[in-house]
Image 1 (cartoon, rainbow, N blue to C red):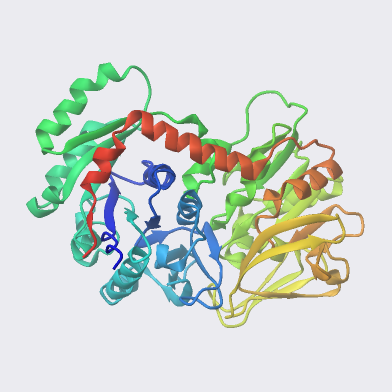
Image 2: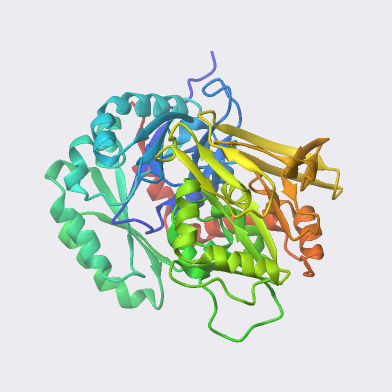
Amino acid sequence: MPPASPAPRALMFQGTGSDVGKSLLVAGLARAFTRRGLRVRPFKPQNMSNNAAVTPPSPDCPQGGEIGRAQALQARACGVPPSVLMNPILLKPQSDVGSQVVVCGTVLGNAKAADYHRLKPSLLPRVLDSFHRLASEADLVLVEGAGSAAEVNLRAADIANMGFAEAADLPVILIGDIDRGGVLAQVVGTHVLLPPAEQQRIKGFVINKFRGDPALFADGMALMTERTGWAACGLLPWFPDAARLPPEDGMALDSLRPSSGPRTDRLRVVVPRLSRIANFDDLDPLRAEPSVEVSVIPAGQPLPLDADVILLPGSKATRADLAFLRLQGWDIDLLAHHRRGGRIVGLCAGYQMLGETVFDPDGLEGRAGETAGLGLLPLSTTITRHKTLTETSAHDELSGCRIQGYEMHMGQTIGPGLASPWLRLDGRPEGSISPDGQVMGCYIHGLFASDAYRAHLLAQWGSPSTAAYEQGVEAALDALADHLERHMDLSALLALATPVS
């Protein structure tokens, strides 16, 4: 008889707060341990994000599902397709109806915070089932928490951090972010707030985003170990190539505010920051182009007069964000930009906004009713209960380019504008483009990641393309794994993982 395979092991990574680097650390470790020959899988019990990724059809979700984009990147780091098992609970904030609750890739419904808090205990068995099924195909599961490990006010029904760690009996590594300041208080304060059993569950800590001479922080590392009893598992220097990896958290958009310097000869793509902006990974391939400047405009600021292209991004609440757009005066800016001959691109919800009307007869995004669109394309959209979730890989007959992307929307668009499609994918018309070519929109996310098509589009806009986007993501994942290998003892970290019971 062949020897029995060793039991899968797991290790959980929790943070002292949001945006401390949990997702990227797990992605880098996933790539590093995969390169060592282990079958690695990422897992996040509960995620809150409007930046989601489509998963291919599977026995667990035959129609295809969706998970947080961070888990999709982590799956890529492992060299495996994304799966709904990797992120069984996804919360997508909407408008006044609360958040859309996605369970194992499928929309369960909408829930406000108090309603979801009551729902969580019934979801824990689904989360644990997904975890154990994922572990059955792995040697190592890297589990990512959400927010802070010390949100003790939410502990009673927690399924994202210590509640899950206790239910699955997992050891925990705590991650702190020194770049934001106060990391000693972050780590020691977390220890103070946790009850003794949860203090003991944490086996070590990692300090992320360090700048300067590590020797100058040796006393700080020793102090945290002395005060907590936790092992120091690594002091990670700032990793500049993180900017080449697709972010999930909306905080990343803060770095894309418009420059205060003089105008350059780069193509200027301006993006209004909608209140429920979604799937902003569409911006990443454009950001990677040296010839393109992407500026995300925050609320309260006008859209710049010198924009070459205004891109209306995805949104989790089309009608609410149309109202938000008008509140900022951006509708006036958009129409003036159009009159000056500027280009306007709408993706998904942004495409819906370009039409004449958006109907929501069942109140799926808020109060039932209709909202006037921007009227730049002769189309109308009805928000529907059916959610389209599908990957796209097709030949665009109009450009001659291969396009890969995905659709993720609730709504059907009709109107005479469909007779002039932006794309024709294997013979199927998609989207709409105005007769003068100034205004275009479609439902396909991710099409800018296709290098040939991005080069085709930028050439039309008078800008060269020199980036190989997908190769850049792969190179950045390898560089991140190398970075962790240099600054952490990964063998010692692996030894902390325990068998999945």
